[in-house]
Image (tube, rainbow, N blue to C red):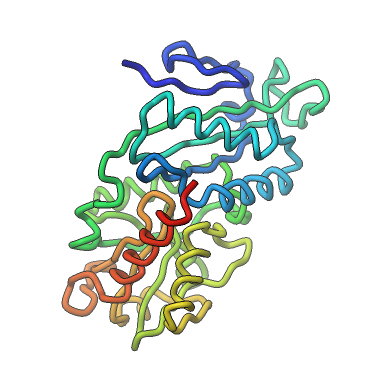
Amino acid sequence: MSRTVYVNGEYLPEEDAKISIFDRGFLMADGVYEVTSVLDGKLIAFDGHAARLTRSLSELDMAAPVDMDELLAIHRELVKRNDIVDGLIYLQVTRGSPGDRDFVFPDPATTPSTLVLFTQSKPGLADNPAAKIGMSVISIEDLRWGRRDIKTVQLLYPSMGKMMAQKAGAGDAWLVEDGVVTEGTSNNAYIVKNGKIITRHLSNDILHGITRAAVLRYAKEAQMEVEERAFSIAEAQDADEAFVTSASAFVMPVVEIDGVKLGDGKPGKVALRLREIYLDESRKAAI
């Protein structure tokens, strides 16, 4: 049975879903997106994702196609229609289809935004076996545009980074600019040294991760020391442990960086504890 997807006010079988070839998301990558996890049939951190979506739209002067209450209702309806227990909901808003290709933004009064959502079923999403063994990362140059704080659909270079990592036999790539790590291809990056959690400070250089914000809050509540600053690959290789956070991976331990094993080469206790806390608290707050 095919999935039910949402396109501009309609719930449709995925094979019937269509958008215009002139949609600016297709032609210009002129769009933003969010991915919300579903655990036990409930949405994880929806309010955070909705707030970031609102900010991304504002930063690009893009009209919101629906209000956040309606967006929540759409998420819940897709979970219901597709019987999602554990999985993801992908949401994308573009500047719409003006009917032809042009670099100039169309008038939002005459060109409505395009809104698309679909689900991905991921049974056992929170029980990813990779979390028990950790993953390796490589470092690559960060060649993305300067506004990484806006969650746009411009994902070509992160995709290239994923492929570089795959070719090297690694799980992901950490992006490096001016000698320091910005973030992973689709996640925020952290190291731990002498019990202190170190992660890049917020700016236009990195995505303001919803999972990042929650994990740092839980870490502080658990009396863990947190320092927000940049760090180099060399410092990361000398760390006791490392990890990444994202909406779909939650807290994922990193055990090797550019071929150098961290500690004993196994997931560290800080990362594992934070994953446990995050999943527990997220389930309690899920809607």
